Length: 373
Image (cartoon, rainbow, N blue to C red):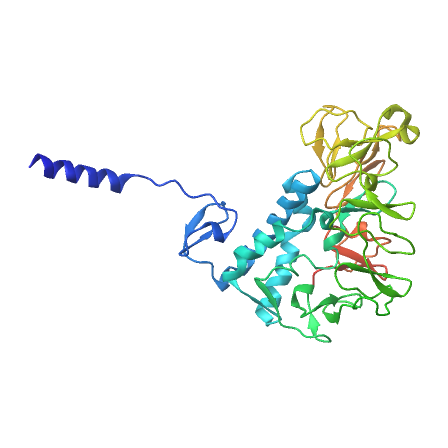
């Protein structure tokens, strides 16, 4: 009898044990009957075709995390810059219209492919002399192009909402939404500034020419390979630096900034490549060495994230101080103050793309979406 009660006790205890959820980064970390949920733990039930919106947003945040690892800066800031709501609204509309098909069984492989993207392809592109920056690699709706879970179903010449719709090509929205799928121009073929060359090549001198590796010649528009940590200097692709003098960030390795060594001198200060400083780290205003999408706060003398609407922006403290960019909006005049203003909505008049926010661009003087809804 005692043995029976002991056995029942063990069974009761076994049934009452709360199992710790298994952490995951993607579905491939989970059992076949599970998927990786929004809380980054495995949950019961396989991923289904109805989970396209949730899956798209998970993909965006996976890219944001990878960009943070590659470049420094916070995952949240990169996520906000990528604009998951606009991107995924476009993707959901494409799936509903049959322009692409969501393959849930491929989503784990999709996230792994996005996380393995070369860091050079996630580089930030300078867009103006004040230092406002955006992710150039995703500027024309190419974010999910290489994700096998989103299968394109639109042939060249067909109507598209984003590049993930197009089979072997890209979505040209320069004339408005919806766009048209156009083919990539092959290497050595003729091209114009309106064309896109095959991956790993660029339009140079009217032809698509292969990007070059380290020590290759980068003249007349030929680019250095994004897969290598190089930049073009004096006509050659040379390694980016982790120390020594510099003129701009492009000369320094990823996760490094071309920082002012004597900030009070402003633009006359000597500069050198220094590791980026993370959010919360101590900094000197005007040194310009905080991680991308952040700045050195004058009051706390620590790196803080780029501000949102209504916050002060611009050259705080004069040209020898810190330039504060607005992440999701534009820096402009509001009465006697210079603050972050809401981005101009689609259809509003614009002079340049940064006035329109991270997921729109300035087309023929009007803000237009980068991702058609």
